[in-house]
Image (cartoon, rainbow over all chains, first blue to last red; front, side, top):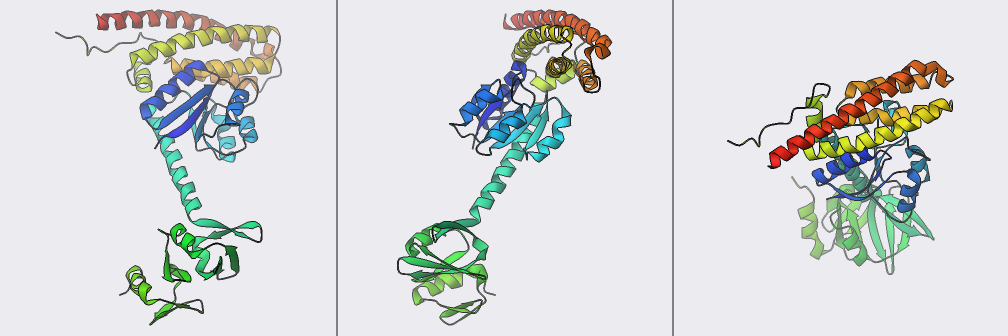
Length: 228
Length: 133
């Protein structure tokens, strides 16, 4: 996978060197090079990128002032010759801080940090879902959901604390929750396998709730749970 | 006998190992960087003279900040360190007069360095042509 990227750097030799490193890595799809923050902001107001290689001191706005004005938060690798910016870099949650000039090896290390952070953020996105309840979007972490119950054109999401009713169908949710720790156990129920307390015959229990297990789904349930 | 594996040797002032590590022995890239660095250093030194004579300390510091990594890019890391020290000094004084000796030294160094870089660039081009022929 390649990161779409932008170089914001007023020093031509530094930008040339960085472009070569990007090309050599095979991990970067370079969308452009801007000599100042204002021009970069204009591009970024209409285009999304994954990563910005950003100088700090430039004519006009500084790199940090540019980040303050961005409407979204791409990953950032600071490229500067002044280590005194390390604290600000930390404050702005930049991915890495490269002191100019830097070697290819150091550059690749920075890209590896970007990859790790991207995976972490994808992980965060993948462990939650937003459901529409009474006109607002409510965030539910997957591990908070005990089970979902069909109510015709609506579905009830049950957590240990609350119940949320949203306009949806079991068929949609079955697709949505594939690959997670959820399983359809009955035409009206999808349960979080990690939340099951016990199973007796054709009924399973989650925090005091009785949930029927259909004959057709019982073997799938038994396959997915870890029976000794 | 082939001479294609003969490595370019930089003249004494340059940190050869540093340059080769930085550019992975890619002489074409090094020549490009030297060329653009000479252009950038020459332009910036003109700005430095202007700011010094106008007594504009902050702009002078910014020029030093900009020149500083260029010395690193051309394999002169000790000069990069020196300009870094002068840049830091700018933040602790009140007027350009207080850094006059450093300013004059940097202007002298830059002038000398541009000549050295230009000569080195000519050597590299000659070597590159030799390899091709």
